[in-house]
Length: 386
Image (cartoon, rainbow, N blue to C red; front, side):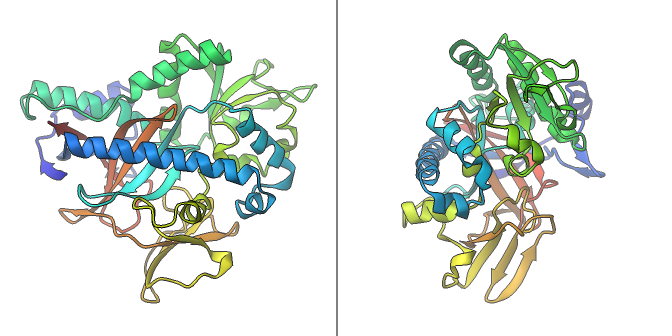
């Protein structure tokens, strides 16, 4: 695994705008970056694929354990009135679409699971589509070895997954939704709309705040059509605490992602995994803060519901060496042993490893000058060679 300088495509900004990648620059700072890229060997890619598949299956085993235990449902802060909704979604094997594991790995040794973004993972569009365009353009320009490839079957697998959802689960029409205040979220949902359309699944978009409640307790769109299938780029931990969560059991909606993802995406899964698979080479020791465990010399405090690094604190020898502000923490925290991200040219790098329908499907890399990866951390493309 290497970080290599490479020539930027002279027209990449024009292409980004043409393809709808309007958030390539955020608040005046580059988000998409291609003055460098990451190179892997085929063996390293195979390793990441194997680790991703194994960790995902371990997480699914953890869900099975949580839904069978009131004590664990409490630890995960699943509200009492929706515990049956979450459990039933798992017991009836409600289908999922995608998820992303964040891994710390520099190309050697054991990759470590930092967290599981299983409910509302973003950076999908740039990982699935725009970095593939980058690869094709750089190959055509002769800037990469002729046998270069990319660990990226995301778009193909997404389209195929929508076809399966249509054929096996009756997903003939899909509503998709997100919040108004994020250009990245809207672009992610638009990309998923395009993939669904390519698979033959008709769809429509509305913002989360536009979802209504019909006379019979069903969720409806702006045309008062009943919503039967809904992809929402909106966290389950928010939904389960809002007033309309009282209607979830009776609304008859198939959710993407399903309610059991509220367990997988919860940071509480990290100490549970460590309890279930102690000493596993791809896990970091982790504990529930409320259990007051003995603390290692270096550790990270993570809120159960934190996203994009918000409210994360890193402690080294009783001193806080990094923290990120945010709105989380009241729900409780976990403690995870600190494992430094690998550094390349002074940048801390994290690997986002994607799964579609429980199968590894590609990676995206983010880097930052700071220890905590956040929403403005830069995205860099990658390739691998035999």
